[in-house]
Length: 141
Image 1 (cartoon, one colour):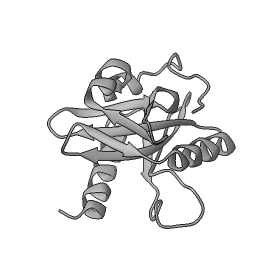
Image 2: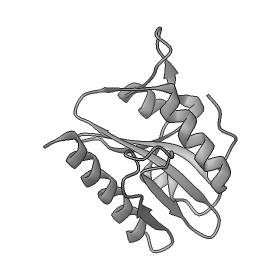
Image 3: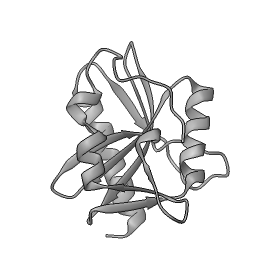
Image 4: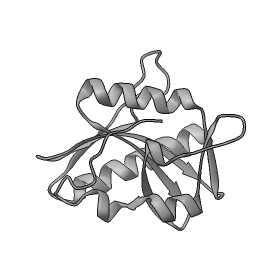
């Protein structure tokens, strides 16, 4: 499947997961990666929390990101009043949610998420949708 199609499919999957909880609502931001204005892939929220989510899906164990991508999601979230999160789905491992500050920097100053990092510092979907806001904290690079 083409990368764009796979990305859209995984974004819709994540929206469906949030909406199935009964306490969260989510929408996919159409064309989020195609406009000059930075937008998240998914917006999700409940009565207590609002999340701006950049979604990634990979077959392997590592995903490299440009710092600009992360800065854009942080800037959008700050203006919108949301928490910026990176959601990554590893095939056969499910979704992991990482705070932007938990991403690792490479020697070339890019950022990387790997399965080990996601398992150590990330939250599973069940954890991110807990009603409380105990996971909210300031984001930075």
